[in-house]
Each structure stands twice: as C-alpha cells, then as structure tokens.
Image (cartoon, rainbow over all chains, first blue to last red):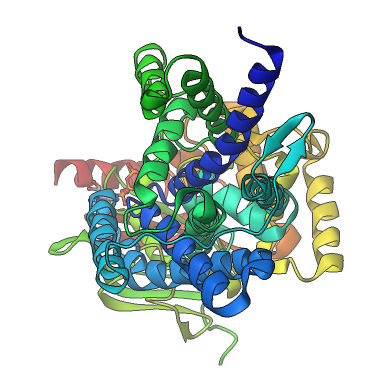
Length: 297
Length: 245
Ligand SMILES: Nc1ncnc2c1ncn2[C@@H]1O[C@H](COP(=O)(O)OP(=O)(O)OP(=O)(O)O)[C@@H](O)[C@H]1O
Ligand SMILES: [Mg+2]
C-alpha cells in the first residue's frame, strides 16, 4: 500500500516546503549569530512580505509579474529591517549594558504586537490571496502546484545567493567575522553597528521572502506568520542556534517529517510531528544537531 | 605643530563602565611618534580600560584624548582605526573559524579598495611571519596560543598604524614564546615605524624593550618617566606601595 510513487511524492513535497521553512530559520539564526539576540518579530516580517506580494500582484503589477513582485517585496522588507535596526535596535547596542539581550527581546516583542495591530487595523480579519497563474507542473511523474514549485526554485536561488555573498564578498567576510568576535571586527576598523544593520536587514528579508513566496499557498492575513515562525524556531532548536548549515538541514528534515507524518499517519496532526522531533532533540542533544558548544559572549 | 608634539595625548580622562563608578580617575600620559611606552600596575588598576578608552570602545566622560593634535575622544573604534591606530586586546583576538588568510583579510578591511597596496602588505606580513605563510588555509582556531598571538599582532600590522595599543601580549605564554612576542613588537615597530603603547604584567621582560614607563594605580598615574628611572628595586617598591594602598 506504500507505493514508491507515494513515497517519492511525499519526499519531494517535504523537501520543497522544508526549504521554505529553512529560509525562516536561517533568518532567525543569522540575526542571532551576528547580534546575539532573538528577533521575536520574524513572523511579522513574513506577514509584511506576504501583504506586499498580495498588493503588488493584485493592484500594481498583475499576476504575470509575480516574480518581480517577489523581488520588490523582499527588497521592501530588507529596507524596513534597516530602518527598524536603526531606529529601535541600534540605540540599545550603542551602550554596553549587560541587559542588552533582554532589551532586544522586549523591543522585538513590542514590535511584533505593533505590526500585528497595524495589519489588523488596516486589513481587518480578511484573508487574501495573490492567486497564481502558474500551471500545475510535473516533477518527474508527480504533478505539483506551480506556485509551490516556483517558491521552491526562488528559495533555492536565494539560499545560493546568500551563501555566495557570505563566502565570496568583502562584506560577507565582515559578517562571518562579526559572528565570531565583535571586538575583532572593531579592531579591524569595521563599523560593527552597520554590520548589525545589514545582518538584521538580510535576516528579516529572508522572512519577507518566505512570506511573499508562500502568499499564494498559505493565504495572507495579519497572523499568517505565526505558524511559519514556530516552524522556524523548531528548526533552530533542531539544527542548533547560530548554525547556518544546521538551519538548512533541519529545515529539510522538518519538511520531510511533516510530509511523511501527514501522508502515512494522519494529516490532522501535521504540526505535531515536528514538535515531537524538537522534544527528542532537546532530550538527546540540547544544543541541536550543529549547535555551538559555548557562546563567545 | 612642533617636532616635539606627541603622537598620543591622554589628558586627565575619567571613564566608567557603569555611571558613577569611574575606573579611570584622571589618567594622563603621552606617547611620542615612534615611541615605546610601557604601562604597568596592579590588577584592576585600569590599564586595559585605558587602552579601550583610547581605541573608542569606551568613551571617557571627562578629559581629552588627542591623536597628532586631533581630538579623538568619543569617536567610534572604526573611525579611530582609520586615523592609524591599532589595538591588540588582552583576550586572544582571532576569528577561530576563519582561515589565517581570511583573518588577515579582515585586518586589511580599511585597505580593501586598494588591491595593490593590500597585496604588498600581505607579502610583507608573510615575509615577517613565515609560520603564518605556511598555514594560510588553516583555520585560526587550530593555531597554538603563541601562534594565535602572532596572528592577532600581524593582523593589526597590515594597516601599518602610527600607534599600536597592545594589551598583555605575553600572558599565559611560555617564557621563550614571550620573548618571541617582544621580538614581534620590535619587528612591528621597525617595519612600520609605529609607536607602541604596551600594557604588561611581565614587568622585568617588558622593561628591557621599552623607552618610557607609566605606572598606574587606581585609575591614575602613580609614577612615570624614562625606563632608566625604573630600576628593579624601585619598581618593586612601587608595587609594594600600591598593594599596601
Ligand atoms: N566590561 C566591564 N564592565 C564593568 N567593569 C569592568 C569591565 N571591565 C573592567 N571592569 C572593571 O574595571 C576595573 C579595571 O579593569 P581593567 O581591566 O582596566 O584593569 P587592568 O589594569 O587591565 O587589570 P588586569 O591587570 O587584571 O588586566 C576593574 O575593577 C574591573 O572589574
Ligand atoms: Mg587588563
């Protein structure tokens, strides 16, 4: 009864959604690895990305230019991230208070509530979808919704660009260095606060990109970032906070587990399977599969 | 501007990590261009805090700091770096997961748009430190303590600074390695004609390399002068005085 075809299809759809979850987790982990703070408002940047995508497709560009809308939405969330870091986060980091993490937590939680209220106020309880004119595509013998395939391809491309920037550019070197020693980059003459700004922008842009890509799949509403954020944090626990390869591998792992759980056990509990894996990891390996052993404070 | 103008002037600075608790309480000193000044003093005297203040990691709330006559108090570290100051902190200052070459690249950040100059500086560094040249592609985390020190000093030499602030470079090193580190500082100084402001607990060794000595206690100067005035007996007596309060 478990046909190879079903297994293959389940695996493919698991990997496809896992990569999108990984974007979210990567955003969380990347901001943490540079700034040593958790941005609790990630889901709201996801939400903003999805609204931007909806508005651009529905009102400005039309469904055929969905790909351009994705680029603009992501860029928009990136810019918003720069502004948020500059206005809300940087003032905390300018002073060296011991309580920096706690302040950052309070500020991003406040931001979460603020952005969510604005969205509720402006858009009301309605759910929107930018729709998609992409046809069903065949992945091997498997039919897949075009929007999902497109989201997967875009996410892969984004991950590739992210990796190449980190690996091959001067700014990427500064980002990698800053994640290892903040004093170290300062002694090198790098403005660590501007590194923070770019890192925060990139981190939330990854969430915004996920929101824009998943808008036609999971709908657009004020709290639509919540589930994906929970998945993002699950992945971070599985993969290890601060680990970029961990975020990718754990993202795909979570996608696979959900997909197989839904197909072969019960689809009603789809959101539970990942959670069970999180519990297992917390018991067996509390720092995650690829987590750092100690923080270099 | 006269020829005798100091490169660095620290004048009566007061600095605190927490408001109301001044660690530096009226600290003053000067460093001549190309000079070598050794700062000694008991644990907690504020030696590291002095270097952090000069490099802009902590901004003094009173007093002034000038580099070549230009006020730098309150500037950010990356701005001070651009004026030709390098800082080698007390803690090991390498990026363990980057390769040695990448570590040096980070050190060359301010020169990144000048490829030719950067290349020339790299060649120079590898010439001075062949041990690093042989391990370019190794992760810095795999270096021994002494080699790690070497890398952090080398990284700060790439910009050929006018002033190097060096905090306890020999702490925890075997005596022969400590000698190597002092050699290193002398090499850095000769290679780039940088002035050196060295903080060190390893007093007897450091005294052999320095020109001037500043003894700190409780955030200000206890005694200062050319090294000739700091014989072993006097240093010993001064340390006793500090410890007895
Ligand atoms: N980040 C910090 N926050 C709060 N207090 C600090 C901090 N760094 C140092 N201090 C305090 O400032 C005082 C001076 O410290 P500093 O590191 O400048 O001393 P030092 O002379 O370098 O000592 P050592 O020889 O042990 O390195 C100490 O009392 C220390 O507890
Ligand atoms: Mg010290």
